[in-house]
Length: 369
Image (cartoon, rainbow, N blue to C red):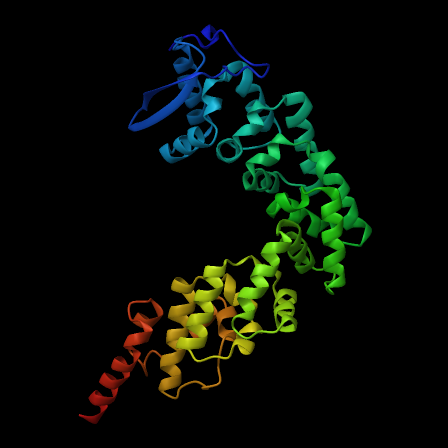
C-alpha cells in the first residue's frame, strides 16, 4: 500500500503538518470516497496513511460510505495520522474495555478528536471518569457521541465541580448520569456560570429530585440572557403573560429551546386554524416539541373531523397531543374509523385540514341518497 512513515513533518501526536490542498479517490469494493487534505509537501505518502486509516475504520465497523465521508469533513486531519502508531492503540484500549466494533466506529465518527488526544493522559482518564458517573459503556458511547468537542477537554477538571454542586443539593446520581450522558455540554460549562444557573432554577421552584430540574438547568446554563428574553417576547406576542410563560417553563423546560419559527408556526396553526385559546395551549407546552407536519397537523385534523361529526367533545383541545402514538391511534382512529372511513387518510396526512369540509359534505350527501 505504501509507507505512512515517509511523511517528514509530524506534530507530537503523530499527525502530518498541513500545507497545500490535494484530493484523490479511495475505493474499497463498491464504495467510492472523495477526500481533500492539506499536505505539508509534495510527499504523497500521506495518501497511503489515509488508505490505511480507512481500512482500519472499515475493519472496526465503519462500513458505510456516509460515515467515512462525514468523518473526513468533520476532522480530515485524522486521515494524515499513522494508523498503527497513533490510532490503533486507542481503538485497542476501547476494545479491551468491552466496546464493540460498531461502538468504536460510532465514537470515531462522532468524536474524532479523541483519537488525537494522549492515550495515557486523556483517553484512559476520561473513560475512567465517565465510567464512574454513567456506569455502563452504552451510556459512555452516548455521551461521547453527543459532543465531539468534549473530548478536547479534561473531563474531571471541568465536570467534577459541577457534579459536586448537584450532589450537594440532593440531585440523585441516576439523574446526574442522565445529564452527563444526554447533555454533556450543559454539565461542562464554567463552574461559576453553572452554579448561578442551578441557583436560578431552584428559585424558580423546581424540585432537585426530579429529572425536570436538570432539564431546566440545561436550558438556563446554555441559553444567553438575551435569547431568553427573546423567547419570552415571542410567547408574549400571542397574549401570554410572564406568569403563564414561566408556568410553561416549569411544566416543560424544553419549550424555551424551541425556535421562534417553530413557536410561531405551532401557535398560528393551533390558534388560527384550530381556534384554541393561547392560554389553553400554554397549559401543554410539550406541544412545542412536537413535529408540526408529522404530528400536530394530522392529529388535530383527526380530532377536528370527529368534532365536526359530533363524535367527540367540542371542548377537547391540546391535551391529546401529549398521547403516545398507539394510544392516540386506538382512541381516535380505530374507534371511529367505521363512522368516518376517510379518517385513516386524515391521520396519515393524505388529506389536509382544508379538505375536511369537503369530506364531510360528501359523507352527508351519500347518506341522503
